[in-house]
Amino acid sequence: MTELASINQDMEASLAKAMERVALLESLLEQEFEALKLQDLQNFDELNQNKDKLLQELMALTGVYKAEDALQLDPRWNDFKAKMRLCRNLHRRSEMLVTRKLDAIKGALESLRSPIHTSNVETYDRLGKMKRGRQISGYMSV
Image (tube, rainbow, N blue to C red; front, side, top):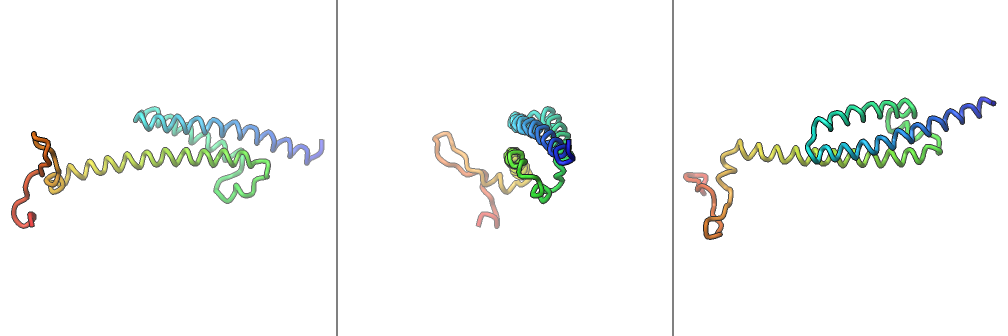
């Protein structure tokens, strides 16, 4: 077997293993999103640790440690790169969910801290008409 044939065979084996690993990553990212939706933080933590290990394996298999390295991959890796882009989008989806939840928590905490905001809350009275919260007296009512 020539050296070139051996290199091609090694690359094909690495590619096959990388495709298997990226399929696992995709599944793991789907599970991660579900854990976030259910607020199952213990499961999310475990999935996150597994994701980190999987990403380390993929970096070792591909030699891609930063975005620019992916440009150097052989064209035979294009399917792999497409799957990795899909995984990046799945990761971003989870990131957006976390960001929204954090924003909601920050808003709730801010409303608890600030007495001025609670005085402007509009509610309904018994007759179903809009009623303002506590009336502000003094200079703030102007």
